[in-house]
Image (cartoon, rainbow, N blue to C red; front, side, top):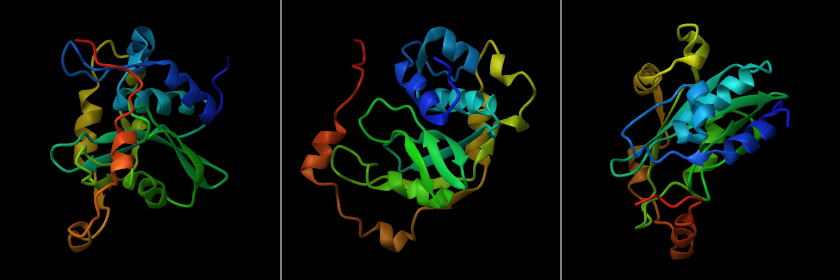
Length: 192
């Protein structure tokens, strides 16, 4: 299979097992992610952005920031015919691929808002970053035989925008029981 379109890149990312980081925190380069055939969201976003860059797209990733107690998420961005989409790797049934139908990045980010909640129904997405262009990193990041902690550090440092005013966030309705149950569906079980 030739991985030449964002949809095909997503199909490829879906073949990778979820990386539960059983051996400790890691942020593998694209070459190591392909070798191990495992990825968590940031590794998949970096790999997806790299593959897209081989086909004329900018290698862009975006950080979705949550409240304490939940996990942040990272997606790879792409633009087709002036509209934004996103590649995503997650172990859950939600927070996945977004078709290129969004007029701007905020609109795309907001498509993740209602799906981002804890087991008690509290909605947790609070901020999103400006896109991080991976081409600003030192040449060869794609094949580093170690971790890409510099990318993670840069994602934390770059400008982030609030999803909504604090006053609005205090009034959020919790997710329904059926949504909470659907949110518990996972693709891979963590090994014990």
